[in-house]
Image (tube, rainbow, N blue to C red; front, side, top):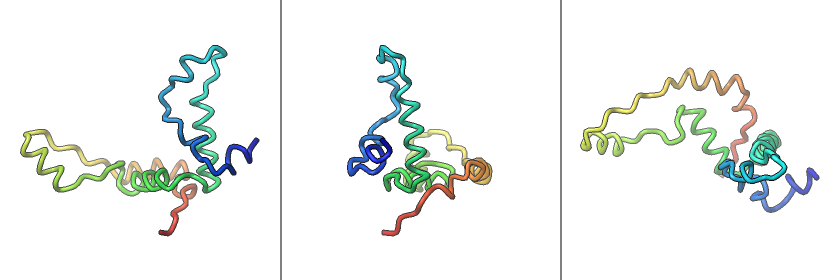
Amino acid sequence: MKSKIFDSDDSFNIWGCTVCDTCDEVCPQKVELTEIFTILKNMSVERGEAPDYYTTQALTILENAKAIPMQPAIERRREQLKLPKIMEPDIAEVKKLLEATKLSKKLVKKEI
């Protein structure tokens, strides 16, 4: 079964799951499919087979402690709208947590 899951040209088999839990809620057998897909995604990452968009986003979080780093234009707009400043994340703390999971070793940076 591994080859049907991991060696498939259609990575949507695993990565199409958005973790919405709908399948878990309606499954008459109470199979926790979301959990299964999460485990399969983790296995895919460890095999170096995760989609580029996934590893790029994970590396961005590892490096910036945020999925989308703040940008001056966003900060200016928030100020114009009189919105409070967004607290800067503690990058060192987030890196420490993610390093404890060995995330950086599991992610493969693909050269463009």
